[in-house]
Image (cartoon, rainbow, N blue to C red; front, side, top):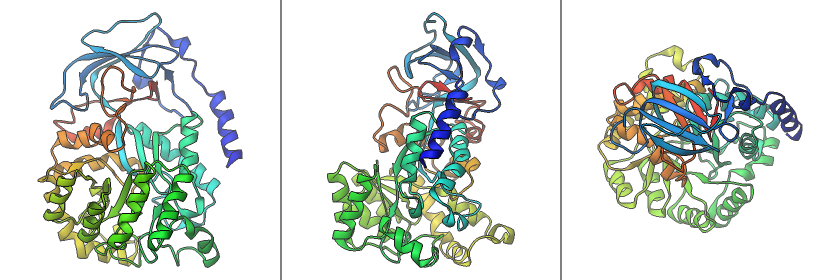
Amino acid sequence: MKNVLALLSILAMALTFNAASAAGREYNVSAVKDIVYGPILDSSQTPTVLVCGNVWDGQADAPLGPMEILVQNGKIAEMGKKVSRPAGAQVINLVNEMVTPGFIDCHAHLTFDPTNFMGMMSETASQAFVRSLPNTKQVLLNGFTTVCDLATAPQWGFLTIDLKNAINKGLIVGPRMIVAPHAISCTGGHGDFTGVYTPDVWNAVKSYVIADGPDAIQTAVRTEAKGGADWIKVTGTGGFMSPNDDPADPTYIQEEMNILVKTAHDMGKPVAVHAYGDEGIRRAVIAGVDVIEHGNMASPETLKMMEKNGTFMVPTQLALEDGIDNINNSAYWAHQSASYYEKTVKYAPTILASAKNLGNSNVKIAFGTDVGSLPFDQVWKEFPIMVKNGITPLRTLKAATSMAAELLRRPDIGTLAVGKTADIIAMPGNPFQDINVTGKVDFVMKDGKVYI
């Protein structure tokens, strides 16, 4: 891994853009075709003025109209109808664009290979790291300036921490990463990969994910924190893609879930619980979990409990509904397991009904895609699925900006205002009128650095 990072460091230095040479000239977004290892413009070197045709700040009920934004040293310095032009400022023309905060994906797997999920289990950590480089770039250039990465494969150790650090150092292009390194699971749960790995490999790596009983659970949480975890993730029910469990079945008893959440919270770590079935969701909410990931089979009663407790939901609706939409398409299922298909057929009515119930609820929703189990160029498709299921465009867009920032404890991102981190994107259309324009992002600024 150190050799990979050293090579990336050399490439990054060789390809660094000299922003000062472009100071004072108008930047043409469409002229930039490919960004590999670094930004094309850095506001710490060159003050940047965005001339915006329309702006939505992540909080207002509607777009705010034409506006200018001055970015200096990675922060929003001014916003208004007209902002100052510091000496040498770079002006970026976005007069035909809708400008919004950078999107936030609260459920991603940047190291996964959606085209060969089982094959990636034989990869080394270095192989997975290199394979992940196009993934991080793709997600950022799709407008996602921040992601919460919720688990890598156990044999890669703390790979996502390495990936996060490489992005932070500017060695590779990617979104800001908030990381739960692994998904803690019980024996026989969604994270039990017995039979996927050879016995010798599984015995060597299962300590990262398998924890039964209060003592083992506390050790697992503390090991994750020691490895650099920002969040703790646990599998509270079975799953759809895992072969030997059922998504409706809870996998931890209440005592176990309680001790996991308490241990994590005592260490200052929020907890995300993977849970599809209603009972598993209910136990997690009772334990005081911060967010339910998926939650696609929650009952109206459990949604009411989440409302009362202020528990967030990250619904990841595309991942399951894509399969439901293709239930009779044999080509779609040709490379999927029989158990995945059978579970999808069995629970499709419950999933569709629960999605409508969520749209009619007042549960706090944050945006998440489960990308990694889905192709990396399809992250935006979660937006229209949510709208189709009765979540308004405003609520959907807030889920990917200000509400996601609230969930992730990052008040510096998710909104556009003076003093905030300059995570800013633009698209050629109005997502309040056509949510599909979220898939056409053509300008990305992260931390005041322009990537496209």
